[in-house]
Length: 399
Ligand code: HEM
Image 1 (cartoon, protein in one colour):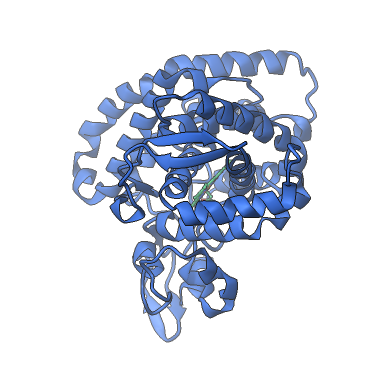
Image 2: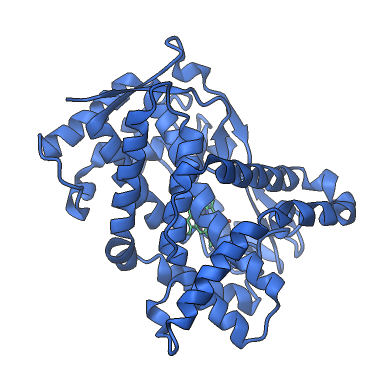
């Protein structure tokens, strides 16, 4: 049923009421309607800029550089690693370099990262409470504008840099420019408003940086509290690399089957808790009619932990994915499903695998608070499901 619904052309719009927090700051594929030309064009852009060949050829070096920097910072953190702050910073550095062609070192500026984190939290809270907040929307809009106004400095920096890049590209070859510049060129050509430009840039920034930062931090927390799993993941790295300290190649990454299963199991616990869609016309599926205008919410959290679909669903067991055929494809959808599914899946997965490979080979992680176990982890529902009480992690170098 979910599969049929997800690929149904009349059930692909993200209803504004359900994603209201994000409406305040996004205006691109994420929040536009499928019938809207903005969605078609931006979706094409995202898909083009995030395709496999581009990720492997254009972004690989950035992934390696940023993950090296992150491992070094972890090694220097004598009082323990706050994976949330570190991963958010690294992910935004990666996003700015790959999508905006801007070199940053946010890893050394926790105050900017803290601001970004607050903003995304407020947007998530607005979204999750939209039925209550919708009537107050008019009152909240100016407040939100003031709050997002705090991003002005960062925007200025980004736009200033983009302007420089535009000046040095008098006759730009669209394909070779970063995603953000291509978007701006088109927005200016079509005389669209500055506001729209900010929103679109913010969308690129948020979708590429926030999601990856949050998921990477959560995955590292889980690794830290699951010592047996961490050991198995390290053994796999040891079998592939032995004492060789080279960077992982694409072929190496493809060999990391246990790491793949570990990530999938992390996503089963940590993917989006829900997806919301709107029927734009009557839909008939399996004898059921969903009338036009119906808000359809997929309760993914419920499905991903339901004993009908998963053996021992509350146990963290990457090996359940060894016999994947046993599981219904649609009970596992961390990147969404259908025409609105996430175009950044390969980008996110590749960066995360490179970073985890580097961490596993060099470091052993354990919670500073010795008794902290997987069972102590609390999950909280934002737009993505997140770890609420990430433990500070102690780092030991593997020799
Ligand atoms: C671990 C990281 C990520 C996760 C878990 C994730 C998850 C998701 C989910 C669940 C959706 C909604 C799908 C739906 O409504 O059916 C989505 C949409 C989207 N994601 Fe991601 N994402 C991640 C990384 C990225 C990255 C790195 C980018 C871009 C660089 C990106 C860009 C987008 C865009 C543009 C959309 C909107 C697609 C549309 O509505 O047509 N995401 N993502």
